[in-house]
Amino acid sequence: MRNVSPKGAIADLIAVFRDAGSRRWPILAVSLLITTGLFSGLAGEQGRMKPRPPKIIYITQFRTGRSDAEIRAENIVNQRRKERLAEEQRKYDEETRSLYKAVGRASGFDVDKMDRDARAQNAADEKARLAKLAQLYTAGHASTSAASSTPTPEHP
Image (cartoon, rainbow, N blue to C red; front, side, top):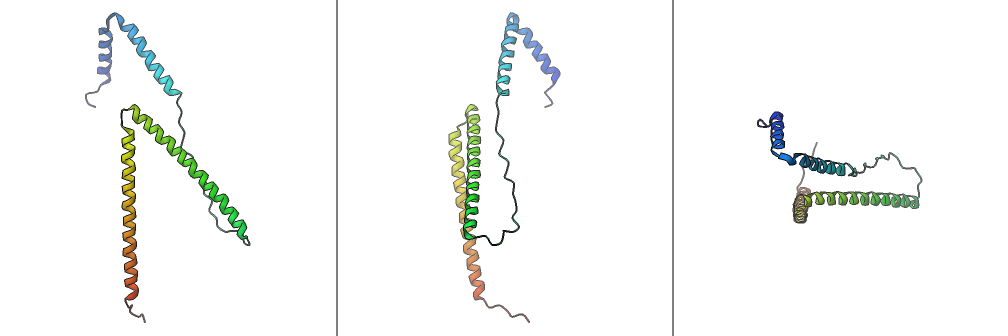
């Protein structure tokens, strides 16, 4: 950033403008039209915000005397709400992913290869996580069965 100076940039702009010769005004007009067109096109773009997370209501007590049918009905309503929210989140994620892919394609990236690589990495990470959980479960199961067979000293 030491080599960047506003004075130098303005001096360079003036030098290039003078060197343009008799066509400098049409070139300036075309440049301004292109810049104005791009910015006005971008100004009309709009994006969607991530949906607000649902308001969490902590249940401190259920009404006493609820029947099994009432409980089932509430569970069904809650499950449908949960599925609807999950579907909205999936659509949002899909839309966001497609926007990132469009930007990547416009930038010259091979987004399909990047997507395949990311999916493969996620699958490998999930496999490693499950293997670690299985190892912890086996180790924990072995230690609890060994501990239960070991006699414990009596406390006075």
